Amino acid sequence: MMMPFLYFPEDKAEYIPAIIALAVFIFMAVLAMNFMIKKSRRDEKDFKEKYDKLLKKASNDKTNS
Image 1 (cartoon, rainbow, N blue to C red):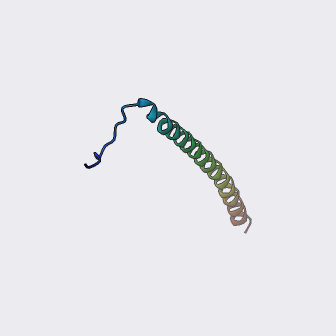
Image 2 (cartoon, one colour):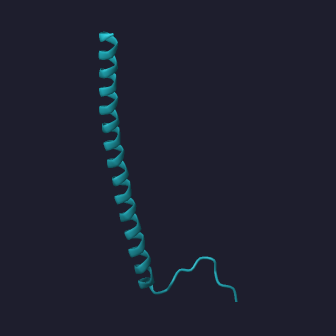
Image 3 (cartoon, one colour):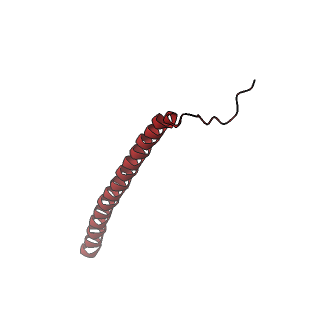
């Protein structure tokens, strides 16, 4: 007798561990995504500050020369 491809248990309590694991992984994925978004915004802000500082320095050097 072959095992059916899809297994749907009669006892629905067998779904509970899978639902808990799914919830944990989704929660961790959301945390990771928030961390990446915050890091990206912070990096963008730092880059913009450094870029603006370099532009000001370059324009001051150009006008003083």
